[in-house]
Length: 521
Ligand code: ASP
Image (cartoon, rainbow, N blue to C red; front, side, top):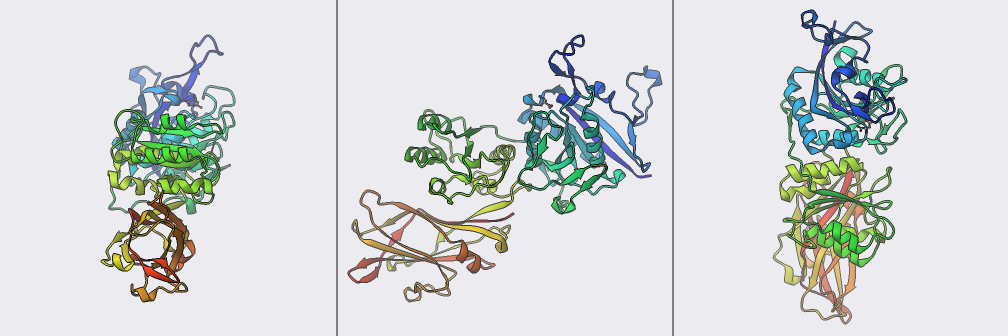
């Protein structure tokens, strides 16, 4: 006989609710104690509650499975079981710490939770747990466990079977997941999609981790691998809730935007934009966004180190793709972060986690990288630092070391950003040319023919008296795919001005040079 041990943590929610007035079945539902809920779960052996003290058994409650294996159960409740609309960072901390305290004593964990914010909790827990090597399964129900035709019993039993995988002979799923109706979903990919259907959850941008029919099937190819054995499990619960989520709508004014984006109490924002990440081209919006990212406030103190602004689509399916339309390319220039194909729940809780656990200079890059499989792609900003001494000759050479997590064989987009470009000692109206080469064999003025294979982009522009400083963004996806080697990346910029029929080297300066690379996570 194989035995596994599952710890069940009850937080409240419809699953354990009953009419608040027992005399009136129509009265509003309110959370009840865990014991009331367990009374309705068939097949739990060894539960002695309700019996007089002397008749209580000292054995651990357990389920006996059809294969005669056993799943032993341990139980606990939140300090006060609640409707999940009342759950937030303080309760996530309590849930995480209760699981951490039992982590070594159980094979898996079940969290009974209300459906309204279950996907926020499953996302938050995904980020809070580091090196999770055991299943943490959230479930609940659309109808109370005492109701006729309830979905609570199968949800509860399926969740326990997945968490007690050894006894039920299922593959290990070392992730935070939601088990609901016929689906097993990654916790940080799931959203509530129906207020009443028994299939109340789905993961629009990621395949299901498993299906529940007559049996449970786990789609192991989508399950995250277990952490290395030397990586110890721990929790980081210090989430920062100074965040906000704002959904744009036709008619959204710059005044409203300023109020919400320039609020000194907000350090991170989710901006729910249209389609693939588009916002109105209105220059006033763009200006407000830039001010928000810099950390400026309408009134009150500035936000030190600036704000993180994450662009997330209002569509449930698909990904943000800034730069595809004119209406979103200004966002790249302003420094808006792409939320790619994250769910709103994952984006918001990841933002809280990044603000609370990552050093200031790392926050932006950590927000753009998949931490727990919550997004399909990563965005890496390769920042280039000027190493050359040859400015005056019109040549600047810079290097950058890509993050080791960058999968070079699956680059979907690469955008070159030349920020705050200035050309000194040149009059307005004069034509300027900038050509950029990646990993050139040598950086000499003679080695930059336009046909050169190493040339990633080239463009000309005229100096404008009214805008001495400009930012240029160029799509260099194709060349980056072929030129990005395994080591450091070197960019060499040649700059010259047109004098009569000739091009003459000229000195340029800029505030920043980086390539933003999107690649499969
Ligand atoms: N309002 C309930 C809750 O989230 C809904 C449910 O559990 O289905 O707690």
